[in-house]
Length: 339
Image (cartoon, rainbow, N blue to C red; front, side, top):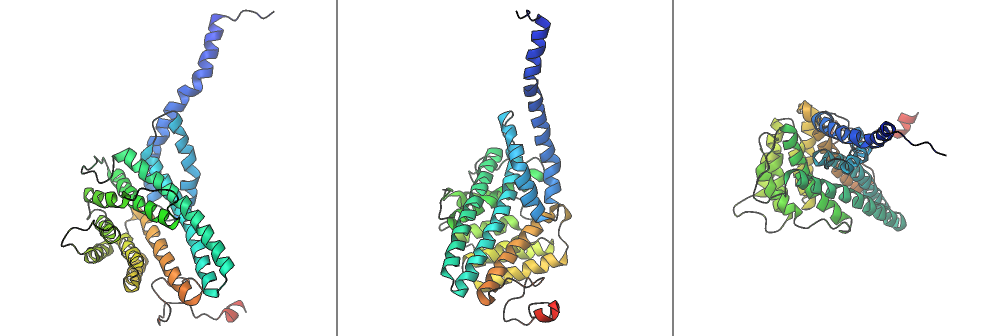
């Protein structure tokens, strides 16, 4: 026959069983604040894009998201981890795109079709993660481009608002490459374009104005009368160069690619290479220089693959097929190297 449990013992069991809940909430708050105050600035100041995107983004997102079960969703932090995870997925998608281009050039239709399917799957994954960035940006700061600017308390929040806005546009573009299978709203880009007026263009190296001009070029009906998007893009890229930041130049190159303007695309790629190689970028935001370089390198790889079947030669970003450059190692003798 079971003995009657004493009241103190019962009370102790209740407290013990509920103790996990008492611990989880303060732990969640501490980790959310620590991530916002320390992890985010550390990551954006790091120079290892692969480690940040596929390490921090992929490795920490689910863990930090789980605290949404016990505290309010840490949207500021999660927009960063989703952003990084999206970059990781995009890098894989871009590799599949290069495989598609090589197969197409070689006339291997089966390989090309397979690579195309793989790239669509990976761009869908990218779009899903970037759409999550858009939703967390809205949750943290309010709807983009609604006529009101959010109250941004510090540099980290200003950076997150800008990065979230840029990634929201990328979500739509990634979804288009995935046959619009995710369903990112078509008005996201226009909203993001309007949101750029809430950012300090000079403080953030011309990126807000460059982003705004990209939207004008990409979304019909968004460009105000009398504006010249290419002139604004070039001015932003040149301003970024004076600050050692290649992000606006990268957006110039992306716009050239999107508008099938090969000359401007190459001009933007060259400027990214020039700024990046100078090594004068803001040390607290090194990850942005790495993002700009990686995106410009992918655009360059597309050009090289289309023309030669191979990607950009090692350390030759800014050189293109048919050009004579003493800095390019594209003409090295493989047999001599191996021997």
